[in-house]
Image (cartoon, rainbow, N blue to C red; front, side):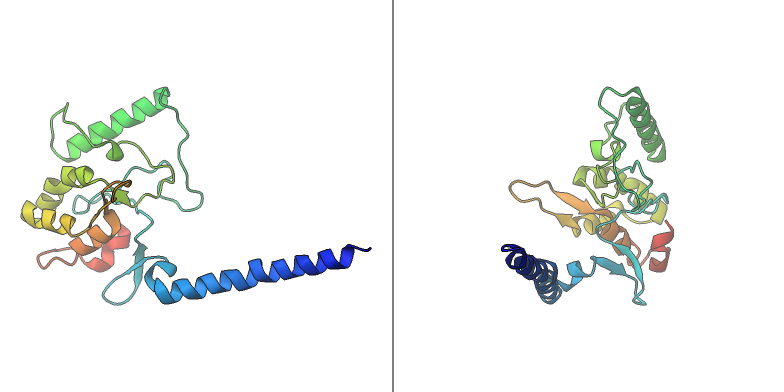
Length: 198
């Protein structure tokens, strides 16, 4: 009993500090300093409706949009995750070959054309919203043709969504913000409010 009440008081104090005061302080600071990120990095249409998050990919299939990395969980947030197939898996080899064939066909490219790895292999989370600049360039002509736009105009839009990885990271393009921007192009025939349907 000698140590019971001191330990109980310490436990309650730590519970209040680490379970209440600290999270509340971090939340308030993040809301004040990084309000966009703190609210989930949400993308809204011109009517203010939430249509997506910059951090969670969606299963785009329309030729008018850039496609994200493949997802072993069909981009479902619950549950998300990888396939856990190893490099020696025959199933993985077959899946990647099928993805490559489908990509080459969709882009009208001959067999043997190199395809960026991030368009062939799913991410660990299955929700990756970023692709490499090479993966974006691979898709430019398809998107431009589907939208009836000049490929250089599409490339300019892609460049506006380039995110530098700095010294240690990798350069990436955010597919979600890029696709939202495409629907804002003056000549675009697809409504920005239809983003989530693709």
